[in-house]
Amino acid sequence: MIRTHYARVLYPALVAVVLLGLWQGLVTGFELPAYLVPSPVLMLQTLVADWQTLGASLLFTMKITLLSFLCAVVLGVLISFVFVQSRRIETALFPYAVLLQVTPIVAVAPLIIIWVKNPTASLVVCATLVALFPIISNTTLGLRSIDPDLQSYFAMNRANRLQTLWRLRIPSALPYFFGGLRISSGLALIGAVVAEFVAGTGGSSTGLAYQILFAGFQLNIPRMFAALLLISLAGVALFAAMAWLSKLALGSWHASELSRD
View 1: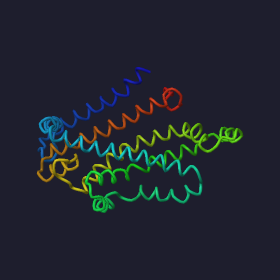
View 2: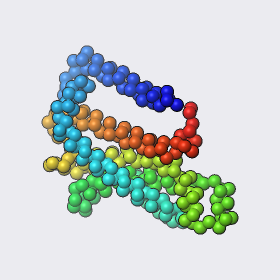
View 3: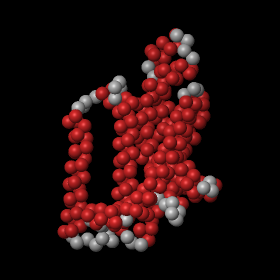
View 4: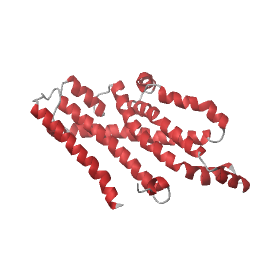
């Protein structure tokens, strides 16, 4: 078990080292200019030199991401609880949940920014719309995926809807729910970045998307790559956090976490 745990960190780290080495070697060997492709060393140097600005932008982007992710989780779970109460309700309303998923956020973000006067709130709304559907879809599927024999047993013992929901449907839905969290956390980050691209806000409260835009206008490509690196690392950290929560909640009893293969 310990070796498997270390392998999950060691193998990706080795691949990253190899890829970064190839990147550095190609940039150095072909003498590529920094305004086309900066080397990893230059990107890291820029990250350290501009950390005060990029770090503040990272905190702003993460604030939008976490707020929208929390809103998506709360709304998604509540909507799933409503869907599972009746097939008619789910049939009537689920297509509108799908509509949220297939509608490009760049198409509706300008309207949301106009309607919601507060810039931070408008970014949270946009990112929430992007992150909402996986929570609804996975949680609803999990609440529906219960053992028919157990359902008959609860009915035989005259369990009411609340008891069936709390003691049967929710435990059955937890693996699906945590799967939705892994997807939704990354989508919340994507939604926050895309929303800020559309908003194009400046000033003291700016996220990494604005730093990418501003660096692009200045042709400061190393700074652009440094901001992209922070976004990627933030996404990896969010996924790792959701995986840890899943392990914490399911590790002692569910087959998906008990398996050693």
